[in-house]
Amino acid sequence: MFNPEQIDILSSVIFVSVWFGYALFAKKMAKKTESLSSVLIIFRIEWMNRLIERENRILDAALMGNLEKNINFFASTTLLIIAGALTALTSAKSIHEIVQIVPWVWPQSIHIIQFKVLVIIVILIYAFFKFTWSLRQYGFASVMIGAAPNIDDTDATEDMKSTFALNAGKLIDQAQHNFNSGMRSYYFTLSVVGWFIHPLLFVFLALVVVRILYIREFASRSLKTLVDGLSMTRYHLNKKK
Image 1: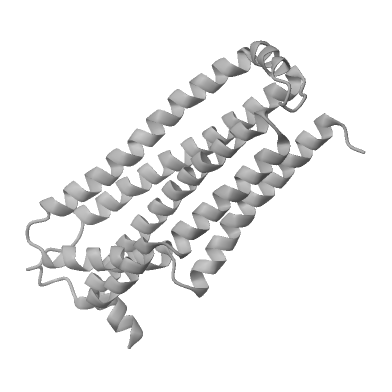
Image 2: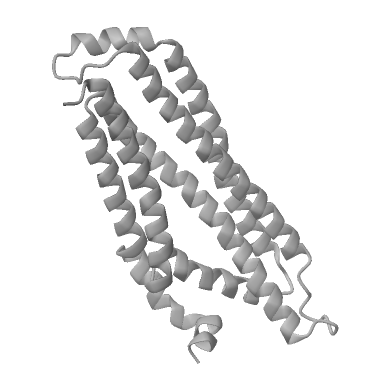
């Protein structure tokens, strides 16, 4: 009923639907139940509350620097991978010749192979923009931290301090959300590799990625440990009251 090229295009549509469908699902699910994002924002706001109480903030600056360094690494690495993918795009003919030799690989033309490589490049470009925007947001948060009121600042009211902690924590959380989106792009890029073998394998790997992401975000041991640690945060206890 469908020729190989139509099946390849259909599998790409399913892939995009699964990817962005999970992103919407995770966003809505986080509002209804405990997840890494819904729990970590509480710790980030609590971190900012503790920061205000510290006279020496070298530790906080070091933590922010470490976070920015990690994101910068992924942003730089993504550029290198994009360069490698562009090289693969120019070598589509060689890839096609290799594919033709393997009997159990899905039949595909040079144009389809180029399209698949282009999909990888587009995903990586999306990831690069997410990483760089996350990096900029962490820079904004660093400015906010630099403007945080001192512990002995008599002009800073409790409401001002609470507002700072809430907004600074939310800004760091937004930066981390963009970093997570970039990391998800990496996971889904790995599933595209299966597309060069067979469209069904491609879709299957995309579903496996969704399963892994769901377990890590909503049912992991790390989440349970973080939830257990919420009792140490004043922000969480005050929110419950």
